[in-house]
Image (cartoon, rainbow, N blue to C red; front, side, top):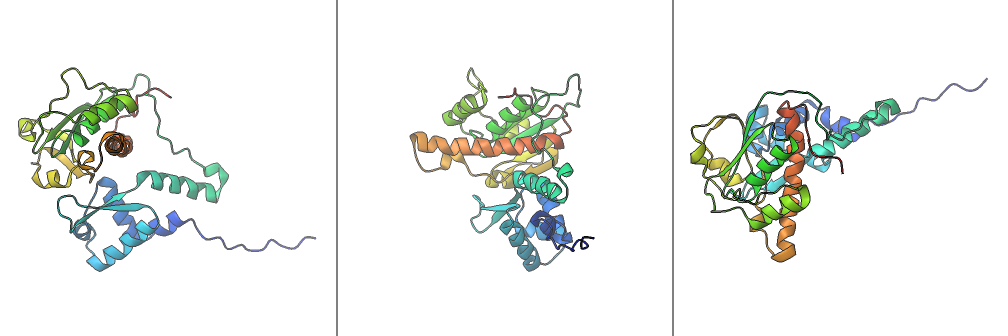
Length: 267
């Protein structure tokens, strides 16, 4: 007869160790809604700032949360959830328990045939309305095949979209914003409209944006037009910003309850 199997102590995956803590889970769920500063998270969870900062550091060390310095007030930092890392870590955690629990974390790219969804309206706001907000509006409109009403505006709009914003949408996503669609608008021009979701993408615009929607959240993103460098070096900032926005849009679509998620064709 063989010897009885030995007990093997296996550490749970890091994602489970991090997310299972009650306070860290509350921080993760708060950041899943949008980007926040430490003092805002302190108000949300009702815990001392030193304790919140400690657990935020653990989440950052684990790669689930990232931070960037506020472009409005350099003394502040915005924290956000790295949803791609969370998705990968969650899938790996299931696979670690049993191979049958392995999940494909890729979001669907084709619309559901015959599916209907409520018409929701989403407004994206930044300061100049020349790069981040029009890129976000164009990508959401593109990925949902126009099934979402999208708009963009600025708190201090520039006259026209940045040419590199138009270029990156055309070259990377096949979206044509030429032909009279490159003018910007002031957020005040939308004062009479109500939006289901208002998303600010600029730290300064977050402070200046009026209340125009039932759900107002913030994505803290650097202005690609303010990046150092010209030519291809400057264009790279727009490529990076568009890719970051595209990721956030992919995770926004399920929040909007749009079943036909990404409507672009398979590559």
